[in-house]
Length: 127
Image 1 (cartoon, rainbow, N blue to C red):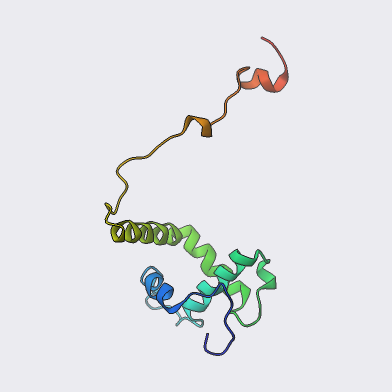
Image 2: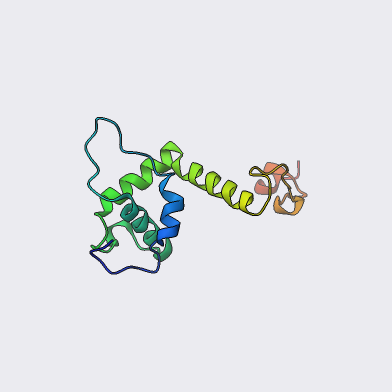
């Protein structure tokens, strides 16, 4: 990041310190990483914030193929879910709450049903 101007979507140093521990280490015996993981994450944040296509990622970031590779790999291996769960637990603990939620709420209004029922409502048949 030192070689480019920052974007509003870039992580602060504090944000990176919180997130860095959740980023998977490079594979043992594999090629050394070519790009800084902070720049990969900054590029993903830029994409998510701006809604641009992968190919329109600004040239200051690592190549879009590399960014997409990490995004996809982390989605498939559960890294994003682990990051979300871990950060949620840290926030709850800082608020003086139990790290893990103890209950959930299901709102009956969030699941809409039809009074006509199932396939009959779709086909217009009455029985």
